[in-house]
Image (cartoon, rainbow, N blue to C red; front, side):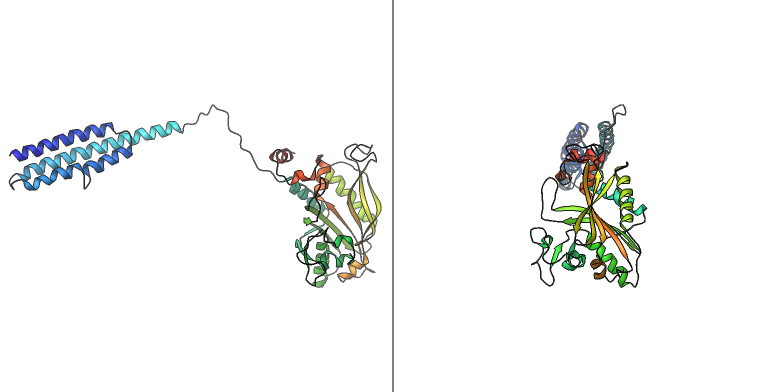
Length: 357
């Protein structure tokens, strides 16, 4: 019986010690570690049980009952401690995540459409309302669509390497380049119409990125253009001026005087630069317009007969007008932006100011 009493004493000490540690546990993690330490396969209780095998057979049932009682007591104590700690941690988490509804709300910054895209959206919307259909074309072009079909001769300076980004040598049979204007879309749209067995009228607006070797406060190697053209019977300069007047008035949201000055473009004849009354001084003369009261905004003209011939349209029956405008330039004029490079520097202050308009 001496061995039985010793084992009972060990079990009682183990139980007292374990219950004390369970009560002191400050987290579920610690409690789990105690469960493994005392009730696990290699735990304290298992170590004590190793001595049961040394007892006489008649004493083993007695100590077995005591072991089961100890094990039950520890398991129940662990379960109760776990419930208490779970509730305690839950309350602590609730308190930590508590929201003070009396505090002022946090403002969240919202993204805005880039000012260049804003301008593109406004411009194309105006032309769409006038009946022009949207068209797109590739940014990597060939010389035929970018130059030849637009009546730009081989010796024209615009085809030189210092103006155009070529992928291979200029003049190669399969020379590729980054388009220098959106006018190739005009060629592709007219070709598509003829190839499909159709014929004018055509009224198209094309917008997109273009590329030239230039960079300063008013020029960028990559910028955006909008190309607008119409081909039909009896199209005249009067139609061109009417479209321009409506578009510029709608875009600047006020009546703006316009004038057409004779100019030269290889793909239009006659050609004209288009000026508007200075939007900064209301046509009175200021530093921006150099005292003239006028600001040049785009190039235009009647589509050259050679351009119509290049796409298979009879220039003796049909005529057309075309003009191209720089998106960044018009956005700068409308919003008083002094430097083209602001559009591409991604200064958040500038973008936020433009987004608020």
